[in-house]
Length: 76
Image (cartoon, rainbow, N blue to C red; front, side, top):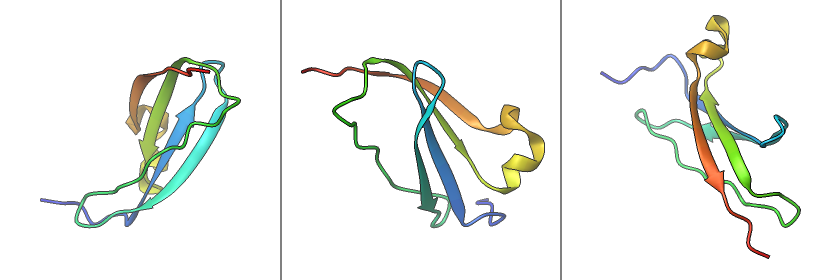
């Protein structure tokens, strides 16, 4: 079953240096959220970390967040 604990999910993109470069607030609809990040011209390529969480998940610390490393290539 789909959880109805939260109707908003946050998607945060962390740079290779560990800085948060974008934070999106996405509406959840029947367990799904849609969104995208726009890569800025001044970003560097490398391994970024995508973290996704709800306000409810914050009660349990970052170990409860979804986290995935992604590679960003910046071609100039």
